[in-house]
Length: 513
Image (cartoon, rainbow, N blue to C red; front, side, top):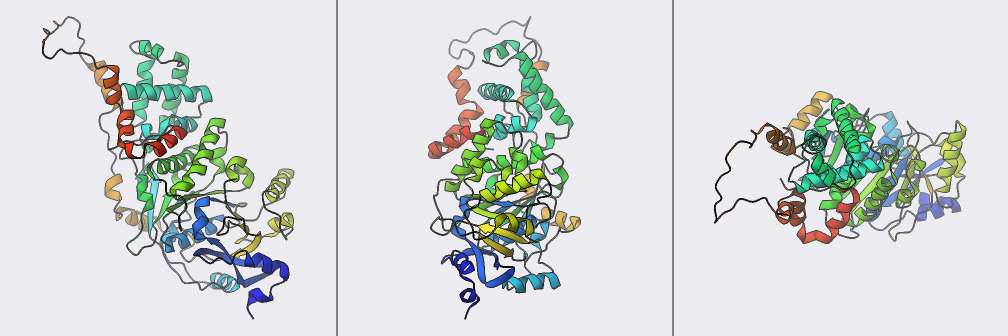
């Protein structure tokens, strides 16, 4: 008689909710009345992972190992994965794990045939700060909404920054890096540019000055490296290895973990950029990519209403592009309810209840789960490291019963790879030659600088007019056709409808290089 047949009735009902027929990821084994039942696996169907999810829990409860466990199995199933590695703990996914008593004990408890294995991985770093292939974005592609979030601008200033972007596009002033944007704002606030500033409705000299000071301070903090070319192509996150396993892209963030607003907003840019470029595919038997958004509370903190609405729409719509998003944070209350309501899978590690605020957070967490056979308030404070409360969407889209779960052990190295070894891996990557060296081509800064240093035309005789080819200023239509915005729109005519919907979400845009 199998273990599932000898389960108590309540536990047997829970276990039956995880008996899926299609491919699924193995999370662990059911916990009931203090016992772990290896014959009652807790799983999540591969086909529902584009319905998004949440991994939550207090510090030290095992969230990072859960990410590693899920990423390994996705890779093994041929699904590419993106991981944000805040503390530098996830680089070990590329190396086989080390057997030991704790690993063997956990594997025996949950019925896991543990075998050490490494997985194909690429290591990325924002602006090349740290160990990884540089990830950069052009200022134009990043867009005014996300840039306003990074700069800490208010709603009025954000709208004004959007007008500045529009002015630069209509004048053919390409915004590649921060000095390009700073040069455009400085020009608009100069004696020469004030006339043009007045023509931009709703943009005051005072607001332009605030934006200019914010940009200057931002650059002084060393942020300029994150913007520029070559811009990272998010299609490179969708690769598989020659053996068919999905590539795990690990964004190494320890070097910038003291700049949380920057890296959380950059993660949102990556997600929005994926949304722009991917076609509609509907529901697939497996996702094209699963994107883990670590330290999610940093993205939502102090966010404007418009910014939150944009995130909510992006999360809702990107599912149809075959991309699943998992938010990783300490408490479900860190995620706005409109976003939380779209997350189909929940892996909730232990929560603390030491203070009145902790108690309120615990009560709020319990209310976000379906009705359960467990006393969730008591269970969530008593879970051990590597244990979690799980509920996912079943194959038919209905939530599974809440299951207390002892999670499996990752098969890759649970810890960081040596820094020198990591650097060797980065230099050997096929992406290194494409992105390692920054390029500074002519753009808005150079054009405006040349305009300032050009000799004055005063005193020069005007050239005689040539009847067959009169010199003239370009018309408004010609300016628009020659602008970056028009080229970007023209490039995407084939999928115009889908991309134009997304272009309005964050004001981001991809340019052909």
